[in-house]
Length: 498
Image (cartoon, rainbow, N blue to C red):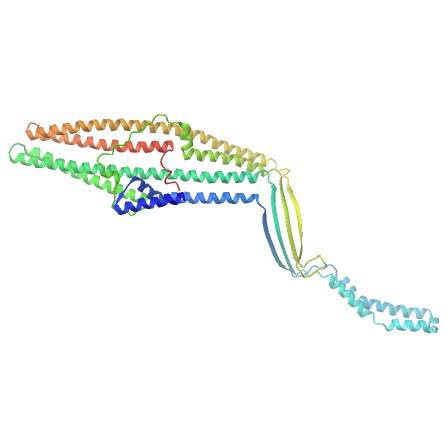
């Protein structure tokens, strides 16, 4: 909701600026942030890191997987060989033949049995009974019962895996993804400050050139008035033609200077349009262009707390997060060489099934177990990898210390430049007052005829130089304050950080 509010506020600022053709510094910042491709990319990186963190959390939860397959084989697996199949299939015929042979041999060896009418009737009954067919059918049914019919094999399994102990790998990975998301945010903030810095530089460049254009126009008007006065004095014989030529040369130089300033201003406006993502030919006026005097507010550069600066700089926070990430990578590497325990459960089905003989039906069973994996010997691979991870962690700490030293130097340099810019502005203001007074005396003297045109031209040149130096000093104060805010991490990005 807060982000939506800020976004709507930006739209209001920008729409108002377009409607009036006047852009403020905040509206330029808003446009630049909304259209900067680097910020859009870094924002997507934040989203990607956020989803990576959510994905890492799922490693704590049980995972369910389904597996299925079908296989067609040329031949089926046979539990009986061909001889056994033939023997079982003709078992009735063999038994019947053996009985007939046995009865015949019995009578042949014992002729007296022919006199026993009852026994002969029994033997005749056994000989006339068909036992071959049912026994053959029984043998064939046994052969069919041993058929596996594995030419068409279907199999499926539903498996559940719940990690119980993975050597701390899951916990370390979750911390890494959490730090990575925060790291992406800090990098986005750093890119955001860079965009604001570039936009402010382009903004104040346009303001500086617009002020110098006004100055060049005013200087040209003064020279044109002086040229008109000299022409009148030449006509009256008070001034020489050499004086007139000198003034005309200065007028031409002023016109050339105005042309250069105007071209530079056009290019600066195009650069600002490019940063803001608007058409390069857009006509607009900046709020600070309309001010006669920028009058920058002095910066109180005393009492800067470097610890607060370290906490505010996105680069420092990024390096701190990188250090924490590499600390977790040590644990992640160590976890690969520690025992791991997982709970396994599954339900498996096959067709043909073997739970009730061989049947062409889908039947299955469930099972539950615990899987334990203990690395026993890896020739020191784990020890070497852990040492490498520790070296990478130490590198990030050295980089963090180096960044602290560089940031401290940068802050002190920015403080020096802020103080130097304030002194230059004070000197430029005093020089401008003197140049104004000098120009006034020169003009009065020229009108009275006691000061030559050359001295008046020198006074005009000094006045122009003093005005230009004051404009540069004012812009320099604005920029040095901006650089100090960037160095201390206080560049105002809170409103635009969405």
